[in-house]
Picture 1 (cartoon, rainbow, N blue to C red):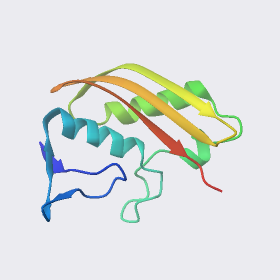
Picture 2 (cartoon, helix red, strand yellow):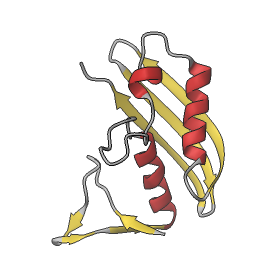
Picture 3 (cartoon, one colour):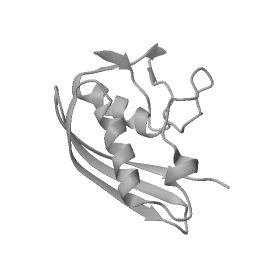
Picture 4 (cartoon, rainbow, N blue to C red):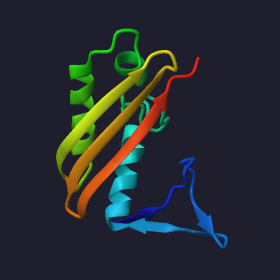
Length: 121
């Protein structure tokens, strides 16, 4: 599969005034990252898409077991993902952030990555 490549700020990447395409293992890694960074209700065309960051994840007393299950389910929902081999959560309450590190096996190969989600306000 191919997709439009996103830059570090998650905006479309342009090179020489042309959109950049991403494919293969890099496309799969980007797709997983997009899934994990989407907040439930964020996309106005389908408010059922996303993770329940405000309701269940970035809360005062997060349930780590439940949150692990949520992340595993979302990652496994990405087409081509065969297994979640490692998943770790680091809650930083003072900064109101969550760091998710993961390793997955896909049709294209293995992916190791991490994302950071911050709750503002």
